[in-house]
Length: 81
Image (cartoon, rainbow, N blue to C red; front, side, top):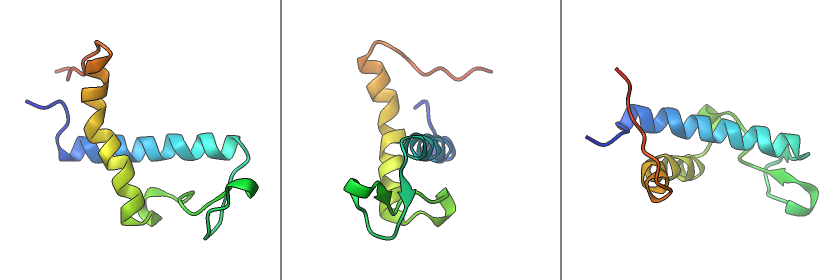
């Protein structure tokens, strides 16, 4: 069985998006409709439910790839009973 079912993939994707937003806000970034790296403006600095589908898909792909990535590092995701 794969370590993540679809429900878990969405949970991990949301958590990753939240982590990314906290990192950006801590570094001085703010929300803006048009990305502007020089002024630290990014359109994806919104809650998950307001995130556009293409931006959500980035986090979903990360969540889907995470077990493989950890495996390459010699780690394994294990579901506890």
